[in-house]
Image (cartoon, rainbow, N blue to C red; front, side):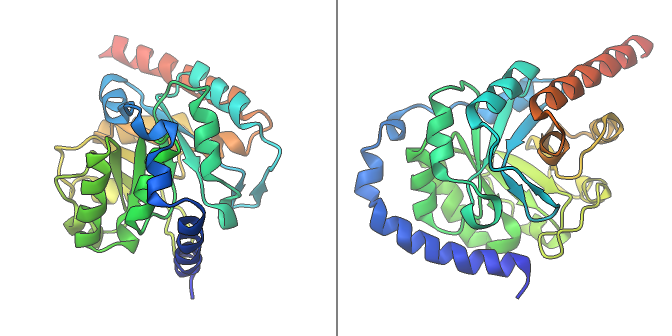
Length: 269
């Protein structure tokens, strides 16, 4: 059983446990269930850089773990640095996350919040809305086309936006009209290996009527401009910032430097 299969088996057990703890009726009565979601899609379209900064306490792909990162403080720094949205890893077993991170952060941050998890069931969509998410991530690799359409349709009916994450050519056939944003992940979820050129390989093959973001393995400004020239609209970055001594400052300097180079590049054109 590979890494991804292990996660899915654990996730099925988690869903059964969560349903006992929070019934759908109870979720629908939560305060955030009635709020209007913020648009990550609009932010991506209106920003020239489009950095979505990620919060997680642990990464299975690298020797990274920090349970003491202050959620509210770091995400405020992400916002001040110029991030257009924040991705929150809510998986507990492999990333030390929690859906409570969403609701806690929702009280402090006015940016769109993306719930990043391994979503396989309709219950998780309702749960995401109730805990304050603005957008959810669906992973094409672990879902059939019919499942994606069903989950995305439910999400849209609740006001949530949907990112469909692609890993290979076979995922492209699973794209549906209910999707808001396409993401190409440069990490192989079975082996956890990262190849930034994965974005390059698949960009020309996917429809361009969606905003398109690149995820994972983006570690320097050259990556940003290489992908921008291809046509990417945004970038999801986590480990670049979180593996540094000061993640908030790392994000601030990175976005600042991207803006500097971008302005110089525009003057030359």
